[in-house]
Length: 226
Image 1 (cartoon, rainbow, N blue to C red):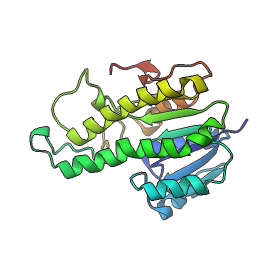
Image 2 (tube, one colour):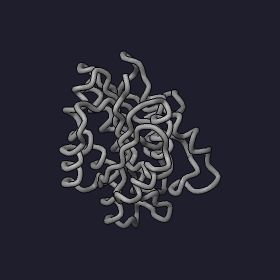
Image 3 (tube, one colour):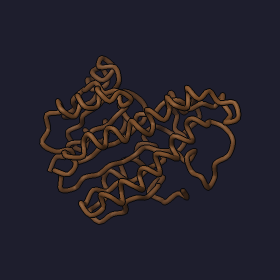
Image 4 (spheres, rainbow, N blue to C red):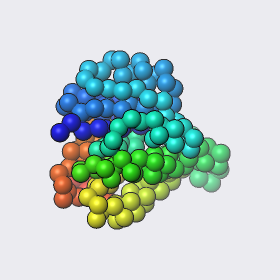
């Protein structure tokens, strides 16, 4: 059965590569971006069944409109990939809390908004999967100084993952957080692993079988410490 897969923040980087691989596998992909033109340009460069949609995950009205106008009877896969502010220039002691708030509004609340809005459609699927693209920067076990907005928002996203997984386990919807690793993207900068490798971690969680793990934190299919 062809899956319907929604990928947020998918006009570039890991999100775009995830969308590409899903489309190549024969899935119907809803590729979203804050800028409709960027979404359309990205979708035009992919083969397969790819729909371009405008979606600003930090805007509740945009999320509500997207869910209302999606036009599918179900959503099988939601990849919450949209993220901002890898704030290497900041330390928690002097952080600009406006930047922190913006990161939380996209990286945490954005994923939360979209998941809530699409939950009826995920419930209509027999094999619902929610993949929250997180980062080891959000692991409390290894957390230190630096990137406070990004790290705190990803730690919170991990917490949300645990809660959603516990609440949706009985409905067969698997919810996991995935760290793609340091990837050579606009956010990650040069020197990281190829984008296809980072996307592979995300796709592993997308393709989990029924009865697979839920409420976990993974990279390359292996558990990471919270």
